[in-house]
Image (cartoon, rainbow, N blue to C red):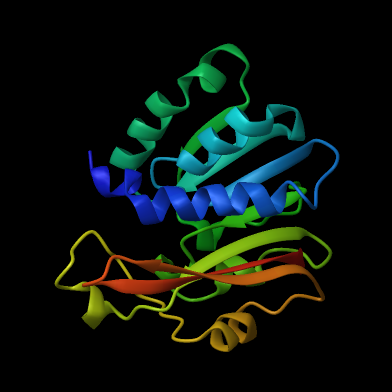
Amino acid sequence: MDFAAFSHGQIHSKIWLCEELEKHISRPYYTAILGSWYSLTSFLLLVRNQHLYTHIDAFDIDSHSIDIAKQINNAWYIVENKVNCIQTNVNDLFYGGYDLIICTSTEDIQGTQWFDNIPNGKLVCLQSVDLTPEETDKFGNWHIINSNQTFNQFKEKFPLSTTLYEGTKEINYGHFKYNRFMLIGIK
């Protein structure tokens, strides 16, 4: 298990997502989380407001991460069938049946086909960082392959028809810092 998933920056970013997303949803959503890693986003969404989510499908390409995600989310996976953790390449999926699509790891997924596969009119919540692969080599646990150097680059790569929220949060450790970007809106 990679405990970097529980780092300050990861948890802080996901709580920020929960806080902002909750301002824009008022009914239960059938949700997809892409590049879910250990699916801590599912866990936090359901701990905070499980009534806002009818079901969450959490997708990741790594089978080991999916096994851990099932353990972390087993309270909702086993008893209530609220979370399903699925190993797959998100670039191969189509998201017509979902009300809400979340991706907190846009920089870790090759290309934008996954985003292109989301039908127009869907609510999305996206996050990224402004780091490059070269910057993260010395800090490990980063898998950046689709870098977004600026917030404007991030917005241009993932255009929305309606923006409900946009923001940047600095994560600063003194010797290492980066910006986390977030968009919530309608594709």
